[in-house]
Image (cartoon, rainbow, N blue to C red):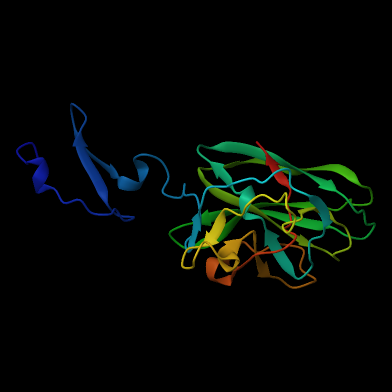
Length: 231
């Protein structure tokens, strides 16, 4: 390899089996291209979406908004970007309307670019929603998550408790920065402030994997904030 010119090497996208070769001073070595420069899962948006600069008109108008019991819902602006192995265990949120019967099932999902799917890392069950105010839920044991792009999705038991939403029709709303990638960004039809997948009303355990093709992306007048991750 020492007598090869740089121009004799081809510049091609790497795959799962592409190797980088070199010399460490004593041995000819090779390593997977995916191990150089960080994780290939460390992306910013799932396939089919794009991101534009976020502009603010003022302080957003907060409203009470509930999760539903037939969908697991996500809030794109609360995307979690992890750049190194990180230990997590706690999420926090705010209850604006209490319920003695409702429960929230909250899953942390990592977006897998290669498989174009969401993979569950853990689940928090918030079973005490009988009072308004700040709430916190901790895993039975901490887990370590790797570099990548994560979202928290929430399903309700009976859709009677309500958390925090935003009035996306008010004059003080923040501009939506998520769009579908194949439409005119000057129209409201391309803007996205939520996505979700269908789930049975009786289900309390969120699925391990969800294909991106199973997600529906939408724009709501009252987008729902989800619990936030403490890390």
